[in-house]
Length: 163
Image 1 (cartoon, rainbow, N blue to C red):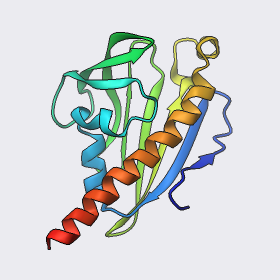
Image 2 (image 1 turned 90 degrees about the vertical axis):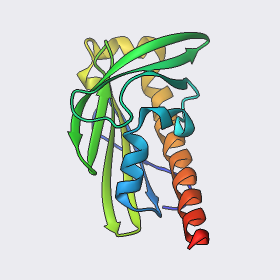
Image 3 (image 1 turned 45 degrees about the vertical axis):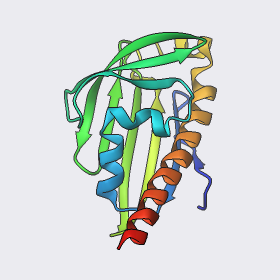
């Protein structure tokens, strides 16, 4: 894997995943994803505009609101429904489909990050077909990972230059 995210076959028609290798410590990447105020910086969907309310670091059960845009502006409220510090975080909103990030350290300075849009947990998974959520989120998770990689590796390079 280079600068592009690798699309993963999830084996489910309701889930779309991609993964990428990021040259940054797992804790730093996890902290970026666990801070909802940072989500607009790496969002690949183009829909996240900023945090409306919520904690500065997410944990299991955390609720956070986001300012979004899909043709028109709107707000959404999310809840963290899966959490393992440094390894896994997932959240959902009212329809219950999830955005899940998994973190696997390769060494102290390299991490594999997998993002999954999981519609299997939605109230009615086929309904997401009506808004092209599966195809659209396949593209979005790959773009998100590429943006997260660029963000984290530029920060790691800046840290290295400062030392």
